Image (cartoon, rainbow, N blue to C red; front, side, top):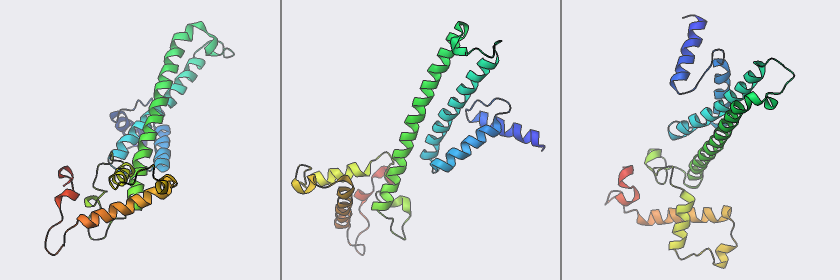
Amino acid sequence: MSAIESVLEIRENILDRGFVILPGETNRFLEIESALVEALKPAPGLQRLIFEQILHAFWSLHRLRKAEVHLYRSQADPNMDPLLIPAYAATLARLQHAFRIAELALRSSVKHLAAIQTEVRYRLQVFPPEPGTPFHEQMPHSLSLACQTPDVLKGMLTRQNLRPTAPSVKLMSRDSLLPQLAKLARARLAQSAPDQSTAPEPASLHPPELQ
């Protein structure tokens, strides 16, 4: 396969992923994708799907900037800004509208990915996986990534009658409160676990949909 055929095949693969790639833009797209992967480090699965949304929004912003430049280059007078040409008003309005949509999508997707990655890191730091058992089968790592562990721990605190208005809790910052909640959660899980020599692990620790 020649170098040209290889580039064309890569471009077709990118098009199949839902990205509009003009001729000559393949390498630029790959550079942007590589830079974003290096910066955001998405894990396989859900994180990668959200990353594709980020990449699509980022690439859309790139295309819109290129479209505005193309509009400028297509006019007869290079000294005239397209923003001042009435004939281009409708086109520029569409570009600006699309730019705002892409920018909002980019911010929303980055925020979503950040929330999931923060949740994963929180679980790993507060509930280190035990050796000998697959990571994805342990609590709370087996829960959906949509489940916010800090909120669950705060709920456990409330059930223990430790109200946020209590002086001992009110003076604690979020950083100092969450480790205490995690300690409480581990203790409750340990208390609910039966003797391993006489009974299997209770099903209540693993919701049916996660077994």
